[in-house]
Image (cartoon, rainbow, N blue to C red):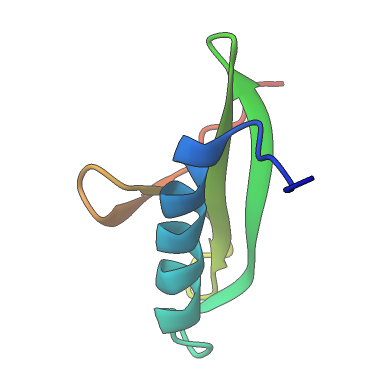
Length: 74
């Protein structure tokens, strides 16, 4: 029996995030990771990285192709 994927439409999104992660400059970014999470009742993936110059954590926005500062709520 062939292996099935519960989220076949997510594979392109994951691959896009992996491609972006591979292009990050080690001189500018560190600790780049792809996180899986539930967003609005669906499984989603987010690329998170720390900008070395500021020490601030950013997340990648696929729609705009840029990293935005992550606002953490306490």
